[in-house]
Amino acid sequence: MASASMAALAADAPNDLLRIGSKRFTESYILAQVLAQTVGARTGTPPTVLQGLGNTAIVYEALRSGSIDLYPEYAGTISLEILKSTAPMSMDAMNQALAPLGLGVAIPLGFNDGYALAMRDADAQRLGIRSLSDLAQHPELKLGLSNEFIGRADGWKGLAQRYGFTQVPTGLDHGLAYTALAQKQVDVIDIYTTDAKIAQLGLRVLQDNLHYFPRYDAVVLYRLDVPKRFPQAWAALQTLAGSIDENAMIAMNARAELQGVAFDVIARDYLAGKAAGTVAANAATTKAATGNAPDGARRGFWAKLFGPDLARLTVQHLALVAISVAVAALLAIPLAVLVFPHPRLRALVLGATGLLQTVPSLAMLAALISLMGVIGVVPALLALMLYALLPIMRNTTTGLGEVPQGLRLAGQALGMTARQRMRYIELPLALPTILAGVRTATSIAIGTATIAAFIGAGGYGERIVTGLALNDDQLLLAGALPATVLALLSEALFEVIERVIRGRRA
Image (cartoon, rainbow, N blue to C red; front, side):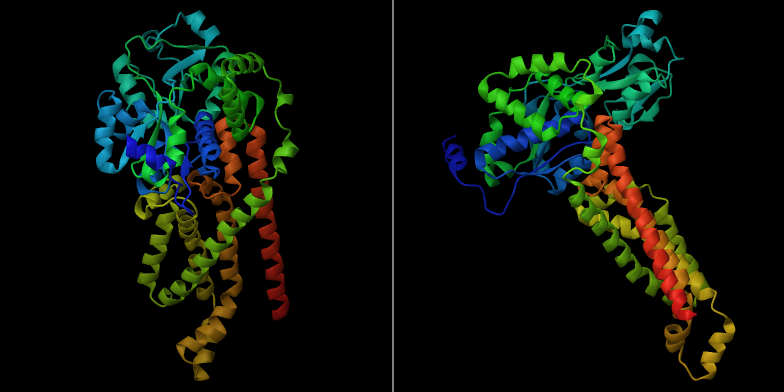
């Protein structure tokens, strides 16, 4: 203990910033900011925060590979989903199982955010449904559950077995589920018990009468080298143990989801209130104030569209698209030229690149993170480059195939070698078709690059991911609209280039 105390007084290693990650839902965004601002206040150096990295599988892989140092997690998720235990585990048992992986769990934050199922209260009263056993007697009700919950070891499959559910649930994004329920598109959704919209929408949380769900106490999942690498930061994080109760967490979630307050502002206000000893009063006040927060409490659409992050996100998005398409062109065009004279090899290569197009983008990103051991820009660029290969290669081979055979023979008659014919005759004639392939690849990359935000690569997808988490249609549009404008501008640019090429040939 004495050596640990001395270590905590030492300065953290220079040029080595603590990296904090979060999942892609409101509470995780807020907790990551609470952790980061607590560290920043103690050390004077704010950590790097990688927000909205996706579901448990992606964030955990980022931690395991060393791309992040810690993130807020839940005890039930660690024991049942990550460690694949058949029963909830104690903190000591989790640490024993995690130690061989170079990971540990610590700093219970003080609240339980469990899973539950909820439905409209009016429907529950009409049908006499109070518990999950009651729900099982109504197979006609439509369930809309988050995709992660459907696939989790402690999610739908085990729950259906315990209660005898026969419904086949529809997969929904958690942020959109409340809207689907309010609009009566589904009858039952999975919720987190600290969600702010439970009370706002008048939902009934169904009793887990057979006690399927474990406790999901909020904790910090971290790499075991963090206390030694960042002693001051680790000492600061220890002060958060037991400091957040469920009412305070609900109030913070409500400020984000019902008032549109920024995550960092919520964390700052909470920590300021905690320091002043007014957290309980602030939580109660916020909870009451946000019960039916008016839309006017949210930032307006134009403020979100032209927010201070627009320039940064534009540069990031442009870089992702430009670099990935340029690298794809540098690889695809020479490869297409190489395989063009060999029909079987050409078909094989085009088939392989076409197969890459069938891989879902999130699955591609998850696979690349696992293979490369990093998150962020590098796997995002690689994924975008792989998706851009097919249109460029296909158009290059098509363009070369459209070159008249007579011109090839004429070049041969003039004594040109195969390489000279390709350089001076075939490639120039195929250029418009090749350019059309690059144009198509660019359009695909602009749209697909929005997915890069799921692994911390930035771009307009940051707004889309956050908008999904908050069910904020305006923020979603503020991310989608710039991407659409960028796609239109790229189309205009390629149109100008094609006109220039045609003009030179005229």
